[in-house]
Image (cartoon, rainbow, N blue to C red; front, side, top):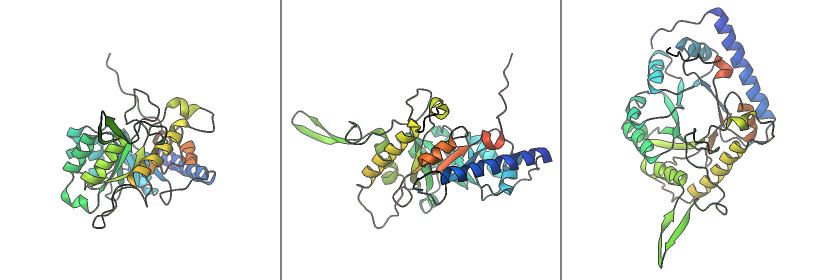
Length: 292
């Protein structure tokens, strides 16, 4: 691990205050919720993109271990100079040609933005064989808001309402194989064909309008919960293999990663197992410089 300098006292005090505030808000949100947790405690991921390693190290010294990054090279550089017991979560768009580089990070804990068979196969192939004993956690990104600007697969509706949650297609007098929604197809592909990956759960980035709404219910979060319930129902129909470990969920439940700085409390109340908080801990990101 390379030497990383500490931030100045003012910055250190700011980070300590911010992190303490977010942790207290997380605890309060959980106590106000009737949620059933699928992780022992909700996981706070400190999103540190564009922030210096000194900021991360300061939060590490305060007990924070889970950090999220959006860019492969930035994550690689930080991982080389920061403690090896940090759990890194990749939460940015992952291009297939970057999978090999990302797989070199030994303490990469999860990738939360997989949305295609190609992407899953690329990271599975890039990981070393020993990862089969400790598979990389994968979350599938779901576009719950339906916005064109957001990545992710379409959500699932309850099977009685959805023509694509899984059904048998009939053409003429011939009955063909089952037609699966893309999300179901990808989930099953990872479980059955990617031994170095473990399907941990689902991730979404909700619409800003939902985050800013004063309504008691965030529709994007409810959509992800419905999607999880339907996906779990279909995954439980997979045949058991006593010789292989179960490579999905936590005790038969997929975890949910939803909620950021502007709406993490609503996400926790809705049942999120992970929240991704950047601005609330590190402050506003620096604006990109524009060329005249």
